[in-house]
Length: 253
Ligand SMILES: Nc1ncnc2c1ncn2[C@@H]1O[C@H](COP(=O)(O)OP(=O)(O)O)[C@@H](O)[C@H]1O
Ligand SMILES: [Mg+2]
Image (tube, rainbow, N blue to C red; front, side):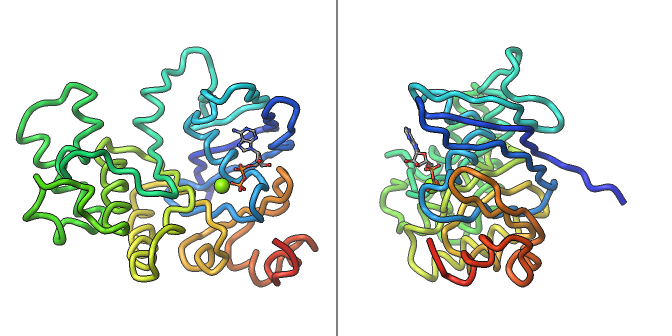
């Protein structure tokens, strides 16, 4: 059986000015699976993740070589519209960043930008997205209250709902639980496990236990290089590279 790859990087190098942050990376990420990016702080996980929805485009002095493919198409080609790309590739950040608006308006934010105003469509989207983000039961009676009144963990699930509302096929998550308490973290991890039936998920985490719990595949980065990319179980039980071995046994990082 041939696997289908949703995302790929071909000979990717990236620089911040003179600093070579991403070094010759080749990788292909399986569709409807969770891939974890792990590695010590500063190894390039976030930089590499952000390439998949062109979030580095605005950084002064940032330069990219090589190809980043979504469904076999290079997303850095001239004819690619970044707003269209971002509909396909949603993103959730480390710190929950809800807008100072109601819960309802946070979820439908992307639809409003697209010009959707039909009440029924908006209401259906809110219910579907909040259910998918495992937040509906907690907020269904206060949809028109401020999102800022929610707890940190609820805010992060709201941000996930906001990302899902525009029906992406890929979800990029950069340390989505690192600012949360253990119970909220478990909720986010359970959610990721559910969502992979429908979405291709890439999660950056500095927490190896978390990578072990939520991901199907793990990629280990070091100093801007991809050291090893395998099934999560394999990477944590019989890594091929000595550097991976050292990292997972806690010898550095
Ligand atoms: N906007 C930026 N300008 C210059 N250097 C940056 C910028 N963002 C990240 N870097 C550098 O690139 C390297 C990789 O950073 P990052 O991708 O954030 O690593 P990680 O997410 O693995 O901690 C680090 O050395 C970091 O200092
Ligand atoms: Mg990072």
